[in-house]
Length: 235
Image (tube, rainbow, N blue to C red; front, top):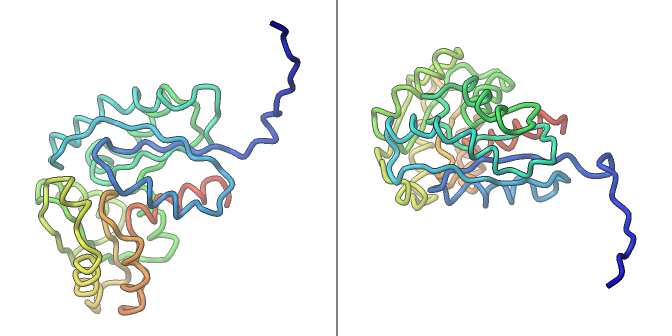
């Protein structure tokens, strides 16, 4: 056997990588990111985090114990300008700052965002203070989410929910259902934009239809997270 010489690609010649932590039960976030980042140069490295089959405050808060270990499974030799933690409702319970701390304990991440933090940033970017909120969650999960928006200066007085706890069913809610519900909420004259919550809810095809019908900004957990991650790396 002979050893064959080789050369290495300099790190500076590689596009900046992004990290993503997706829920074990999530069927929607990765396909949506494939579409949202189709023309983007950064590779996205994905880790999974244990999550419950049902979305409850107990299952969401339990993810706090696994965030660091999940971030640790991302390739260790890389520096990530941004890592996204893919759960809107858990971020409202655990807290965005705490999520960031837990990710950075085991991962060389410059910034950490999540759909809640991203949605707040997007709303402020658009000058929105009054949101219509559509969620798939049961009430015990909706309460901390709406409180988190309120704490950020965003009212969600116009609110609707599918009231579904099972993740598998959330991932299969039809585009027509999302469109009809969002148009109904977003048509209220008091709201300035519509937020469609949950990374497992299929929304990308619904957003342009809703926007055309109500002529207001419409964004979702996955849309906002992709937007914020690009923004944080200056693109």
